[in-house]
Length: 477
Image (cartoon, rainbow, N blue to C red; front, side):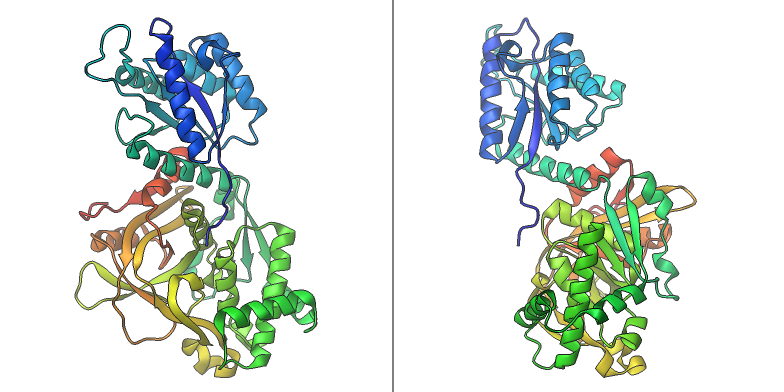
């Protein structure tokens, strides 16, 4: 499943220093435009009618470029600066500052050929990039570097840098002015998932609250024969094949799902935390796990236990990977292996995480509220493959958002248990756990089944100023 497949739009600034050959600039412009077009990127850039070779080499060019970018401000996700030659560092920096778009910036430079360093062919982009970045630092303009200091745009290194940069742009754009949802109160015992709405608001992220009784009341007003209820029921039946689940419980799930989708549409929340126990089971008679699995799979991350920051962590991973994200517990050791652990939830894991899965009841709270009131969990073993783990939290005393990110993989290992689980391997796991307990991160972690740790950290730390701890394979944090 691919989420949010949308053609990215990037601004392109081509730097030029006048006493270098124009042919290098014209050729460089043509080459990088071809690469971007082939990658499915829509490009906003000056034409050769606007400036010499469509490049920026003086203040007048910078102003023209800035005006162009401002006229496309709602479209532009990020900006690439490319240097076919040394470039005019001040003109490029001025273009970015005057445009004022506050989007990610990728700085790229063409390589010289060692047998073409004569005046007609030399670029000096290697040196020019250093000068440009010096000016960007002075101007306070954050930017992303390429893997190699200089790269031909046709190389695999640039292709990968472009892919990562587009992911960074998705994260930053996707977090602008969003609404998160909080349905119900957090479990009384879970001080763990406390968070600060005011800190989120300072980053333009608001929280839409809804009392659990309101969503239950809304679900109860829906008739069995309503089209949206029927659609949700069919979805539950087709995906989970719940032969052992009472029809009455399935009907309740369908109504809850329809009510939540209505609320999501009305409020425009992009992710939410849900009060999943035990009031819902006592009052309404189901667990919401399968409903939440469907929503997360459809691109609306749904976090257990009213963990709003967990929902935000899921949403960030989803933006980065364009794949569903889950929320799991850092739950058990795996024997005495220092780099493996068991990740678990009851569960509401997106169904695409599994090879096989089924709908069942919630073993943990069945003894408290009765098995008949706990149908709706998604049970299965998470399929092996790469994974990125992210936890974001608000630190109220410091007034900041901080997080921890790590990469690893789910293994083939299995254990005899209930719920949804996977055995994960993270090199340097002990350092991850030390950081979690040292700084007081929660026992929940968001997971997506793609390696996107590098772009998550780059986006959140560089462009939003959040403090993101990165756990490396050698075990250092």
